[in-house]
Image (cartoon, rainbow, N blue to C red; front, side):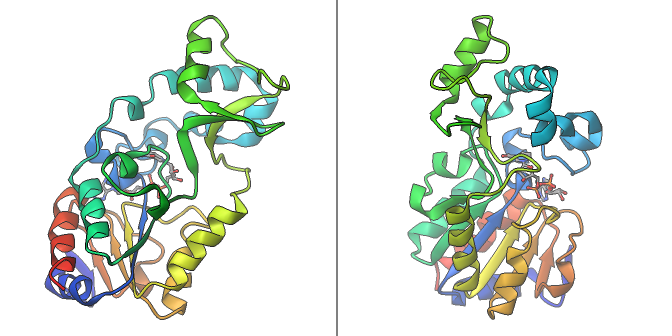
Length: 257
Ligand code: NAD
């Protein structure tokens, strides 16, 4: 199904003609890899609204029970066993065409890099679950090391350097985004000629606001998402097909131009 003014064929032509493509990805690109999104029909928060508290910085800092539950949830996070899918691989192939400026991802799962996208092309605006950061001194340690401590009867491990509270190196609600990362994402939105938003409900700012940044700077803007988003109205095309099918088909066109 296609909303907006343009057909799938038209979007393929745009990808073929584009010279500088920026892709904003969200949880919807990883659902085919077995990682549920938050707000889709089978989303974590759709099914269990209480889970949202673990992603709230204030609750996490104030309540040791929230932290203990968060560590238990991290132990079984689907990212540890998930494999990249065809959509992640399509974006890695897009980089080879030489037209990819950046993948700005809201995802924390590391699947773009594991699919073959270069580290310097992937801008992780919401951080990564593969690392842990101390909220006091900022020291970073691998997640695997801290999960080993949790399994060794430390249900809420403290920073070994300063005793501070440890959290996955992801951005929680109420937590500021890294300025340098945000600036890199803004430049990627401002300097592209085609901006694709893939698998995101586009409800989390400031990431979602990048769509407007790109449009205001003159880029063509395309939404690929199963459900409506608040930015559909300013999109040149809205494609509602399954991401794992439509993205590889579109990206193959980019390599033709
Ligand atoms: P979201 O859950 O708000 O929205 C995901 C959207 O993707 C939904 O509108 C859903 O309809 C759509 N979708 C899901 N699977 C699809 C498919 N196969 N084809 C087409 N559309 C599909 O996700 P968001 O906008 O990224 O915001 C959620 C926040 O949660 C982000 O900040 C992200 O950091 C975090 N998160 C990350 C992961 C991950 O790393 N994989 C998973 C869940 C949540």
